[in-house]
Image 1 (cartoon, one colour):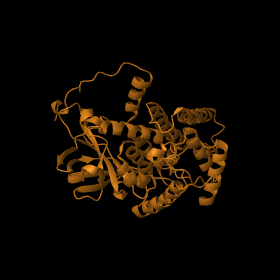
Image 2 (cartoon, rainbow, N blue to C red):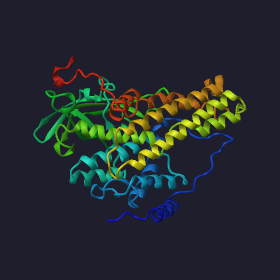
Image 3 (cartoon, one colour):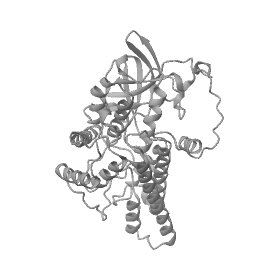
Image 4 (cartoon, one colour):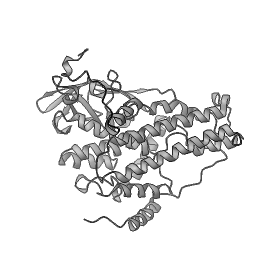
Length: 412
Protein backbone atom coordinates (compact mmCIF):
# COMPACT_ATOMS: atom_id res chain seq x y z
CA UNK A 1 0.00 0.00 0.00
CA UNK A 2 1.51 3.32 -1.10
CA UNK A 3 1.76 6.29 1.23
CA UNK A 4 -0.76 9.10 0.71
CA UNK A 5 0.39 12.27 -0.99
CA UNK A 6 1.71 14.50 1.84
CA UNK A 7 -0.02 17.67 0.67
CA UNK A 8 -3.36 15.95 0.04
CA UNK A 9 -3.11 14.14 3.37
CA UNK A 10 -2.38 17.41 5.19
CA UNK A 11 -5.46 19.01 3.62
CA UNK A 12 -7.58 16.07 4.76
CA UNK A 13 -6.23 16.44 8.29
CA UNK A 14 -7.00 20.16 8.30
CA UNK A 15 -10.53 19.56 7.07
CA UNK A 16 -11.15 16.85 9.66
CA UNK A 17 -9.79 18.94 12.54
CA UNK A 18 -12.16 21.75 11.56
CA UNK A 19 -15.11 19.38 12.06
CA UNK A 20 -14.19 18.42 15.64
CA UNK A 21 -12.32 21.42 17.09
CA UNK A 22 -12.59 25.19 17.30
CA UNK A 23 -9.83 27.38 15.81
CA UNK A 24 -7.08 28.29 18.26
CA UNK A 25 -7.56 31.59 20.09
CA UNK A 26 -4.79 34.12 20.33
CA UNK A 27 -3.18 34.11 23.80
CA UNK A 28 -4.30 36.84 26.18
CA UNK A 29 -1.02 38.68 26.63
CA UNK A 30 -2.60 41.32 28.83
CA UNK A 31 -3.55 38.95 31.59
CA UNK A 32 -1.15 36.09 30.86
CA UNK A 33 -3.89 33.60 31.69
CA UNK A 34 -2.01 30.51 30.47
CA UNK A 35 -1.76 27.48 32.72
CA UNK A 36 1.81 27.50 34.04
CA UNK A 37 1.68 24.16 35.90
CA UNK A 38 4.12 21.46 34.76
CA UNK A 39 1.93 18.74 36.28
CA UNK A 40 -1.81 18.98 36.79
CA UNK A 41 -2.93 20.35 40.15
CA UNK A 42 -6.67 19.80 39.78
CA UNK A 43 -9.27 18.53 42.25
CA UNK A 44 -10.46 15.00 41.46
CA UNK A 45 -13.80 16.08 39.98
CA UNK A 46 -12.11 18.56 37.63
CA UNK A 47 -9.49 15.97 36.65
CA UNK A 48 -12.27 13.54 35.71
CA UNK A 49 -13.99 16.17 33.57
CA UNK A 50 -10.70 16.95 31.83
CA UNK A 51 -10.11 13.23 31.20
CA UNK A 52 -13.51 12.92 29.54
CA UNK A 53 -12.80 15.90 27.27
CA UNK A 54 -9.47 14.35 26.29
CA UNK A 55 -11.00 10.93 25.70
CA UNK A 56 -13.70 12.35 23.45
CA UNK A 57 -11.04 13.88 21.20
CA UNK A 58 -8.81 10.78 21.27
CA UNK A 59 -11.76 8.58 20.26
CA UNK A 60 -12.66 10.88 17.40
CA UNK A 61 -9.02 10.89 16.29
CA UNK A 62 -8.84 7.08 16.44
CA UNK A 63 -12.09 6.63 14.53
CA UNK A 64 -10.86 8.99 11.81
CA UNK A 65 -7.64 6.96 11.41
CA UNK A 66 -5.25 9.55 12.86
CA UNK A 67 -4.11 7.69 16.00
CA UNK A 68 -0.78 5.82 16.20
CA UNK A 69 0.30 7.20 12.84
CA UNK A 70 3.69 5.46 12.64
CA UNK A 71 2.59 2.14 14.11
CA UNK A 72 2.50 -0.52 11.36
CA UNK A 73 -0.95 -1.34 10.03
CA UNK A 74 -0.65 -4.98 11.12
CA UNK A 75 -0.10 -3.72 14.69
CA UNK A 76 -3.20 -1.53 14.65
CA UNK A 77 -1.70 1.75 13.47
CA UNK A 78 -1.83 3.84 10.30
CA UNK A 79 1.55 2.69 8.95
CA UNK A 80 2.67 6.21 8.03
CA UNK A 81 5.95 8.05 8.60
CA UNK A 82 7.34 10.42 11.20
CA UNK A 83 6.85 13.20 8.65
CA UNK A 84 3.10 12.59 8.84
CA UNK A 85 3.28 12.89 12.65
CA UNK A 86 5.01 16.26 12.30
CA UNK A 87 2.48 17.41 9.70
CA UNK A 88 -0.45 16.39 11.91
CA UNK A 89 1.03 18.25 14.89
CA UNK A 90 1.50 21.40 12.79
CA UNK A 91 -2.11 21.32 11.63
CA UNK A 92 -3.38 20.48 15.11
CA UNK A 93 -1.60 23.53 16.56
CA UNK A 94 -4.07 25.77 14.71
CA UNK A 95 -6.98 24.41 16.78
CA UNK A 96 -8.14 24.35 20.40
CA UNK A 97 -7.09 20.82 21.35
CA UNK A 98 -8.26 19.68 24.81
CA UNK A 99 -5.23 19.88 27.13
CA UNK A 100 -3.96 16.34 27.61
CA UNK A 101 -3.04 14.69 30.92
CA UNK A 102 -0.20 12.42 31.98
CA UNK A 103 -2.62 9.47 32.09
CA UNK A 104 -3.84 10.05 28.53
CA UNK A 105 -0.25 10.32 27.29
CA UNK A 106 0.82 7.18 29.15
CA UNK A 107 -2.19 5.25 27.85
CA UNK A 108 -1.92 6.24 24.19
CA UNK A 109 1.79 6.83 23.66
CA UNK A 110 3.35 4.33 26.06
CA UNK A 111 1.19 1.42 27.16
CA UNK A 112 -0.77 1.11 23.92
CA UNK A 113 2.49 1.11 21.95
CA UNK A 114 4.09 -1.49 24.24
CA UNK A 115 1.10 -3.82 23.98
CA UNK A 116 0.95 -3.29 20.22
CA UNK A 117 4.63 -4.15 19.77
CA UNK A 118 5.01 -6.98 22.30
CA UNK A 119 1.49 -8.29 22.77
CA UNK A 120 -0.24 -11.24 21.18
CA UNK A 121 -2.86 -10.82 18.48
CA UNK A 122 -5.51 -11.31 21.16
CA UNK A 123 -3.94 -8.65 23.41
CA UNK A 124 -3.75 -6.19 20.54
CA UNK A 125 -7.41 -6.81 19.77
CA UNK A 126 -8.69 -6.69 23.35
CA UNK A 127 -6.38 -4.10 24.90
CA UNK A 128 -4.10 -2.17 22.53
CA UNK A 129 -7.04 -0.96 20.45
CA UNK A 130 -8.93 0.07 23.59
CA UNK A 131 -5.87 1.93 24.89
CA UNK A 132 -5.31 3.74 21.59
CA UNK A 133 -8.96 4.81 21.60
CA UNK A 134 -8.88 5.53 25.39
CA UNK A 135 -11.87 3.26 25.96
CA UNK A 136 -9.55 1.89 28.64
CA UNK A 137 -6.97 3.95 30.53
CA UNK A 138 -3.61 2.57 31.65
CA UNK A 139 -0.92 3.76 34.06
CA UNK A 140 2.72 2.71 34.24
CA UNK A 141 3.82 0.60 37.23
CA UNK A 142 7.60 0.75 36.88
CA UNK A 143 9.27 2.88 39.57
CA UNK A 144 9.88 1.53 43.07
CA UNK A 145 10.98 3.23 46.31
CA UNK A 146 14.04 1.01 46.71
CA UNK A 147 15.21 1.02 43.11
CA UNK A 148 15.57 4.74 42.40
CA UNK A 149 17.15 5.33 39.01
CA UNK A 150 18.22 1.68 38.80
CA UNK A 151 14.91 0.35 37.52
CA UNK A 152 16.39 -3.11 36.91
CA UNK A 153 16.85 -3.45 40.69
CA UNK A 154 13.08 -3.65 41.22
CA UNK A 155 11.88 -6.01 43.95
CA UNK A 156 8.21 -6.52 43.14
CA UNK A 157 7.86 -10.30 42.77
CA UNK A 158 5.56 -12.44 40.64
CA UNK A 159 5.33 -16.17 41.21
CA UNK A 160 3.36 -18.53 39.00
CA UNK A 161 0.50 -20.59 40.42
CA UNK A 162 -1.17 -22.63 37.69
CA UNK A 163 -2.48 -20.27 35.02
CA UNK A 164 -2.12 -17.22 37.29
CA UNK A 165 0.70 -15.05 38.57
CA UNK A 166 0.63 -13.83 42.18
CA UNK A 167 2.22 -10.41 42.56
CA UNK A 168 3.53 -8.70 45.71
CA UNK A 169 5.33 -5.37 45.87
CA UNK A 170 5.12 -1.60 45.80
CA UNK A 171 5.30 0.99 43.01
CA UNK A 172 5.62 4.77 43.28
CA UNK A 173 5.25 7.98 41.23
CA UNK A 174 2.43 6.43 39.22
CA UNK A 175 0.57 9.15 37.30
CA UNK A 176 -3.22 8.78 37.21
CA UNK A 177 -3.37 5.40 38.95
CA UNK A 178 -6.59 6.41 40.70
CA UNK A 179 -8.33 6.75 37.30
CA UNK A 180 -6.69 3.88 35.41
CA UNK A 181 -8.31 0.61 34.37
CA UNK A 182 -4.99 -1.22 33.95
CA UNK A 183 -1.35 -0.80 34.89
CA UNK A 184 1.62 -1.97 32.83
CA UNK A 185 3.69 -3.58 35.58
CA UNK A 186 7.24 -4.91 35.78
CA UNK A 187 7.87 -7.72 38.24
CA UNK A 188 10.75 -10.03 39.01
CA UNK A 189 9.94 -13.58 37.94
CA UNK A 190 13.43 -15.09 38.20
CA UNK A 191 15.85 -13.89 40.91
CA UNK A 192 18.57 -16.38 39.89
CA UNK A 193 19.67 -14.58 36.73
CA UNK A 194 21.20 -11.12 36.23
CA UNK A 195 18.76 -8.44 37.25
CA UNK A 196 17.73 -7.31 33.73
CA UNK A 197 17.05 -10.88 32.57
CA UNK A 198 14.66 -11.87 35.36
CA UNK A 199 11.92 -9.28 34.76
CA UNK A 200 8.54 -9.87 33.11
CA UNK A 201 5.81 -7.39 32.12
CA UNK A 202 2.12 -7.76 32.96
CA UNK A 203 -1.13 -5.87 32.51
CA UNK A 204 -2.66 -5.61 35.97
CA UNK A 205 -6.36 -4.69 36.41
CA UNK A 206 -6.32 -1.77 38.85
CA UNK A 207 -9.54 -2.96 40.46
CA UNK A 208 -8.12 -6.43 41.21
CA UNK A 209 -8.23 -7.56 44.85
CA UNK A 210 -5.00 -6.62 46.59
CA UNK A 211 -4.33 -3.42 44.62
CA UNK A 212 -4.29 -0.28 46.78
CA UNK A 213 -3.72 3.24 45.38
CA UNK A 214 -2.55 6.02 47.70
CA UNK A 215 -2.26 9.55 46.23
CA UNK A 216 0.93 11.53 46.91
CA UNK A 217 0.43 15.21 47.67
CA UNK A 218 2.82 17.26 45.54
CA UNK A 219 4.54 20.38 46.83
CA UNK A 220 2.84 22.26 43.98
CA UNK A 221 -0.56 21.39 45.50
CA UNK A 222 -1.94 18.58 43.31
CA UNK A 223 -1.98 14.83 43.77
CA UNK A 224 -1.52 13.42 40.28
CA UNK A 225 1.10 10.88 41.42
CA UNK A 226 0.45 7.82 43.54
CA UNK A 227 1.92 4.94 45.46
CA UNK A 228 0.50 1.57 44.45
CA UNK A 229 0.68 -1.41 46.79
CA UNK A 230 0.17 -4.96 45.49
CA UNK A 231 -0.59 -7.70 47.99
CA UNK A 232 -1.24 -11.16 46.61
CA UNK A 233 -2.67 -9.77 43.38
CA UNK A 234 -3.62 -12.57 40.99
CA UNK A 235 -3.10 -11.89 37.28
CA UNK A 236 -3.87 -14.48 34.58
CA UNK A 237 -0.99 -15.51 32.32
CA UNK A 238 -2.95 -14.22 29.32
CA UNK A 239 -2.18 -10.70 30.63
CA UNK A 240 1.57 -11.27 30.49
CA UNK A 241 3.09 -8.90 27.90
CA UNK A 242 5.93 -10.45 25.92
CA UNK A 243 7.86 -13.57 26.75
CA UNK A 244 8.83 -14.64 30.23
CA UNK A 245 11.92 -12.60 31.12
CA UNK A 246 11.36 -10.07 28.30
CA UNK A 247 10.22 -7.36 30.69
CA UNK A 248 13.45 -5.36 30.49
CA UNK A 249 13.09 -5.05 26.72
CA UNK A 250 9.46 -4.01 27.16
CA UNK A 251 10.57 -1.47 29.78
CA UNK A 252 13.40 0.10 27.78
CA UNK A 253 11.21 0.40 24.69
CA UNK A 254 8.40 1.97 26.69
CA UNK A 255 10.79 4.39 28.42
CA UNK A 256 12.18 5.43 25.04
CA UNK A 257 8.64 6.30 23.96
CA UNK A 258 8.22 8.20 27.25
CA UNK A 259 11.39 10.22 26.67
CA UNK A 260 10.23 11.06 23.16
CA UNK A 261 6.84 12.10 24.55
CA UNK A 262 8.52 14.13 27.32
CA UNK A 263 10.71 15.92 24.81
CA UNK A 264 8.15 16.54 22.09
CA UNK A 265 4.66 16.04 23.44
CA UNK A 266 1.89 18.37 22.31
CA UNK A 267 0.62 18.95 25.84
CA UNK A 268 1.76 22.27 27.21
CA UNK A 269 4.02 21.72 30.21
CA UNK A 270 4.63 24.80 32.33
CA UNK A 271 5.58 28.24 31.13
CA UNK A 272 7.20 28.92 27.77
CA UNK A 273 9.58 31.50 26.33
CA UNK A 274 6.55 33.50 25.13
CA UNK A 275 5.19 33.55 28.68
CA UNK A 276 8.51 34.80 30.07
CA UNK A 277 8.75 37.46 27.36
CA UNK A 278 5.22 38.61 28.17
CA UNK A 279 6.17 38.75 31.85
CA UNK A 280 9.30 40.81 31.13
CA UNK A 281 7.29 43.28 29.05
CA UNK A 282 4.63 43.63 31.74
CA UNK A 283 7.33 44.42 34.30
CA UNK A 284 9.09 46.90 32.00
CA UNK A 285 12.32 44.88 32.00
CA UNK A 286 12.89 44.35 28.28
CA UNK A 287 15.27 47.32 27.96
CA UNK A 288 17.64 45.88 30.57
CA UNK A 289 20.64 44.48 28.61
CA UNK A 290 21.17 41.62 31.07
CA UNK A 291 17.50 40.62 30.85
CA UNK A 292 17.65 40.81 27.06
CA UNK A 293 20.70 38.53 27.12
CA UNK A 294 18.90 35.99 29.32
CA UNK A 295 15.81 36.14 27.10
CA UNK A 296 17.94 35.58 24.00
CA UNK A 297 19.61 32.57 25.62
CA UNK A 298 16.20 31.09 26.52
CA UNK A 299 14.87 31.70 23.01
CA UNK A 300 17.89 29.99 21.44
CA UNK A 301 17.54 26.97 23.72
CA UNK A 302 13.83 26.69 22.88
CA UNK A 303 14.59 26.92 19.15
CA UNK A 304 17.34 24.30 19.41
CA UNK A 305 15.04 21.91 21.26
CA UNK A 306 12.37 22.31 18.60
CA UNK A 307 14.91 21.74 15.83
CA UNK A 308 16.27 18.64 17.58
CA UNK A 309 12.80 17.19 18.05
CA UNK A 310 12.09 17.72 14.36
CA UNK A 311 15.40 16.16 13.35
CA UNK A 312 14.74 13.07 15.46
CA UNK A 313 11.27 12.80 13.97
CA UNK A 314 12.57 13.04 10.41
CA UNK A 315 15.17 10.34 10.91
CA UNK A 316 12.90 7.93 12.80
CA UNK A 317 11.80 4.98 10.75
CA UNK A 318 8.07 4.53 10.39
CA UNK A 319 6.90 2.37 13.25
CA UNK A 320 10.41 2.05 14.61
CA UNK A 321 11.28 2.07 18.27
CA UNK A 322 12.87 5.25 19.62
CA UNK A 323 16.58 4.92 20.24
CA UNK A 324 18.95 6.70 22.64
CA UNK A 325 18.45 9.96 20.74
CA UNK A 326 15.15 10.23 22.65
CA UNK A 327 17.28 10.85 25.75
CA UNK A 328 18.60 14.03 24.13
CA UNK A 329 15.18 15.55 23.49
CA UNK A 330 14.02 14.65 26.99
CA UNK A 331 17.13 16.16 28.58
CA UNK A 332 16.72 19.36 26.57
CA UNK A 333 13.07 19.60 27.62
CA UNK A 334 13.81 19.31 31.35
CA UNK A 335 16.69 21.79 31.10
CA UNK A 336 14.50 24.28 29.26
CA UNK A 337 11.76 24.00 31.89
CA UNK A 338 14.27 24.66 34.66
CA UNK A 339 15.82 27.70 32.98
CA UNK A 340 12.39 29.10 32.10
CA UNK A 341 11.30 29.02 35.73
CA UNK A 342 14.58 30.47 36.97
CA UNK A 343 14.36 33.45 34.63
CA UNK A 344 10.73 34.10 35.56
CA UNK A 345 11.65 34.05 39.26
CA UNK A 346 14.59 36.44 38.71
CA UNK A 347 12.33 38.86 36.82
CA UNK A 348 9.72 38.91 39.58
CA UNK A 349 11.86 38.78 42.66
CA UNK A 350 9.66 38.92 45.77
CA UNK A 351 6.49 39.16 43.65
CA UNK A 352 6.60 35.38 43.19
CA UNK A 353 6.46 34.63 46.90
CA UNK A 354 2.90 35.80 47.65
CA UNK A 355 -0.39 35.83 45.78
CA UNK A 356 -1.30 39.51 45.51
CA UNK A 357 -3.86 38.93 42.77
CA UNK A 358 -1.59 40.45 40.14
CA UNK A 359 -2.00 38.36 36.95
CA UNK A 360 0.87 36.19 35.79
CA UNK A 361 3.03 36.43 38.91
CA UNK A 362 2.27 33.99 41.73
CA UNK A 363 1.04 31.47 39.11
CA UNK A 364 4.69 30.88 38.25
CA UNK A 365 5.12 29.00 41.54
CA UNK A 366 3.34 26.02 39.93
CA UNK A 367 6.03 25.97 37.25
CA UNK A 368 8.90 26.36 39.72
CA UNK A 369 7.62 23.61 42.02
CA UNK A 370 6.80 21.23 39.18
CA UNK A 371 9.93 21.58 37.03
CA UNK A 372 12.20 19.52 39.34
CA UNK A 373 9.87 16.54 38.92
CA UNK A 374 10.40 16.65 35.19
CA UNK A 375 14.08 15.86 35.77
CA UNK A 376 12.92 12.47 37.08
CA UNK A 377 10.14 11.56 34.63
CA UNK A 378 11.14 8.91 32.11
CA UNK A 379 14.50 8.40 33.82
CA UNK A 380 16.56 11.00 35.66
CA UNK A 381 18.70 13.57 33.87
CA UNK A 382 21.79 11.70 35.08
CA UNK A 383 20.54 8.49 33.46
CA UNK A 384 19.89 10.35 30.21
CA UNK A 385 23.47 11.66 30.22
CA UNK A 386 24.77 8.14 30.75
CA UNK A 387 22.70 6.87 27.83
CA UNK A 388 23.88 9.68 25.56
CA UNK A 389 27.50 9.16 26.57
CA UNK A 390 27.53 5.39 26.13
CA UNK A 391 25.11 4.83 23.25
CA UNK A 392 25.40 8.02 21.19
CA UNK A 393 28.94 9.29 21.87
CA UNK A 394 30.29 5.72 22.34
CA UNK A 395 32.21 6.67 25.47
CA UNK A 396 33.51 3.87 27.73
CA UNK A 397 30.67 2.57 29.92
CA UNK A 398 30.64 2.98 33.67
CA UNK A 399 32.05 0.03 35.65
CA UNK A 400 29.37 -2.58 36.33
CA UNK A 401 29.47 -4.56 39.57
CA UNK A 402 26.04 -6.18 39.29
CA UNK A 403 26.64 -8.76 36.54
CA UNK A 404 25.69 -11.55 38.93
CA UNK A 405 22.34 -13.22 39.65
CA UNK A 406 19.96 -10.76 41.33
CA UNK A 407 19.65 -13.04 44.38
CA UNK A 408 23.39 -12.63 45.03
CA UNK A 409 23.31 -8.83 45.13
CA UNK A 410 23.55 -7.19 48.58
CA UNK A 411 20.19 -6.83 50.29
CA UNK A 412 18.47 -9.68 48.43
